[in-house]
Length: 340
Image (spheres, helix red, strand yellow):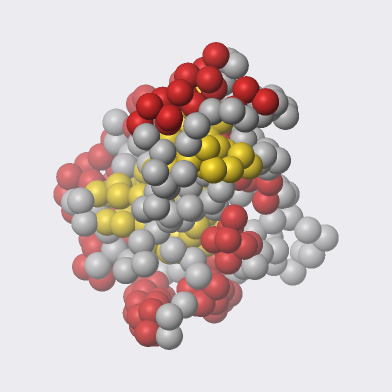
């Protein structure tokens, strides 16, 4: 439920509403706006009886929100959220486009140093690399784990780049957060609710990938788990969903990008590498996502893609990424010029 106050409502009116919400066993969330204040009601498991609010002064309107998510929606938060993992980095603002790049997995110090220095020279500020790797087969490379975190930390010191890396279980959150500037929740863990609660408590920005076959409501409900913990720094990442089509690794759902912009205030980026699984398709799909309104992209880049221990077929080499990066910047500037 959302309680919209009159523009001339007093602080006493607002406080009275909050106290009434708390007496009912729920939690009030104040949502200040330019012209009026709204108060969201969270913690309810179903319909909230609005009778106790009917005679309270200062209330303009009571809106019953039926979505399974609230804090994620524009009903509760009409303005865009801008995530700032670093002083000069914004994800979700009108004047910036985020590029996250790097190998699927941390394989060695040399590999990470090589790709990080190259990406940094292009202007990329966000470096991805998996230390902990969830894999479909137990026989596949699982990542260097603690050693991988150590390498990421050394590269971070060496280049000044910020780190985006995946966390797989609640007990790893604190350790990974010591290195990572953005905690990534992979597609397979989108509905690992204990993990979502822990990353929410961490206070670190969270990159939440869409599940393998998750609906929009399921995806945004997972984001709600993080926001309920008081962490609004959530970045959504569309990476394709599993359908009957086998020509590509997944089916890229670019239409969900502008749809999320209508429904939610959270920034959304696109992962063309996982969405297609094919190196040749990464560039056109990344560029398409720019015009669909994405706030950024995440691309897999490896110094020697064909020798990569994971996701070789979809990884760009450094030269290929350089061409893509140049095109991304130009197309994003064009998008701004036409008001999209």
